[in-house]
Length: 282
Picture 1 (cartoon, one colour):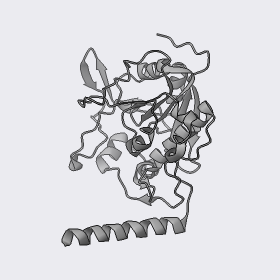
Picture 2 (tube, helix red, strand yellow; picture 1 turned 30 degrees about the horizontal axis):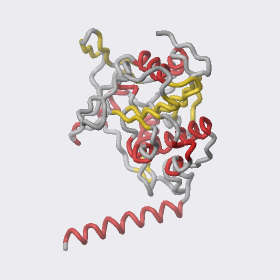
Picture 3 (cartoon, one colour; picture 1 turned 90 degrees about the vertical axis):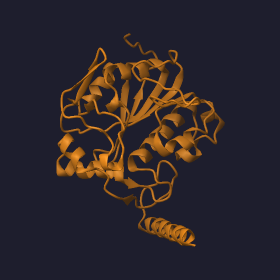
């Protein structure tokens, strides 16, 4: 009986959140299309804020990026914006006209796309999995059905994909320039790498660690995306990206378009296009 009552209370609380969010209104979620004010809880912990030396303003912006979520589907603002960018890229690639990720693969033209999701894009994966041409991988996977891919040494052939998707992954890669070259390599000419990555735009990139010859060296105190008190380890941060990250994307062979939030500069998604006649250095 107690379990039933708890379930009923949770259901009632969720219903009130959804109705309240809808009444207050907001932009449609890029994942599910729900129009409502995002729900919010702070998710950055003091240790991470100190490691990244975030100002109070950047602390607030990053908290909104990660801690504000759609009342209906639960996608964070970051994930919702990434979903919108994926839809934009797919519509351009195949002529579909979807307005949200949840409906994209109802169109047979979108279903024909070849897509690589390199590490799970969180709650977007369940929608991406509707695409027959999806190749999904998780770094370090031991599951027989989920291969492991190293972004610096992808196993895929040249020009394999229309779209490559990564979600807050690149900051955990030791050799970011090689990773960008690899994603460019496996894209078809005109293909797009759609990705999110945390960027503090008012300072240059800071390298926190490096991996050379199998030897890990910390240049700054180790920083992980995951709260120790919650038992999370996640991945080591090798780079804190700054404004110069755009030039590194260009050097890898990409043409860059940014999907920006008009208010929060931390909320940015990259659409990195491989030019139709691109030449990528080996």
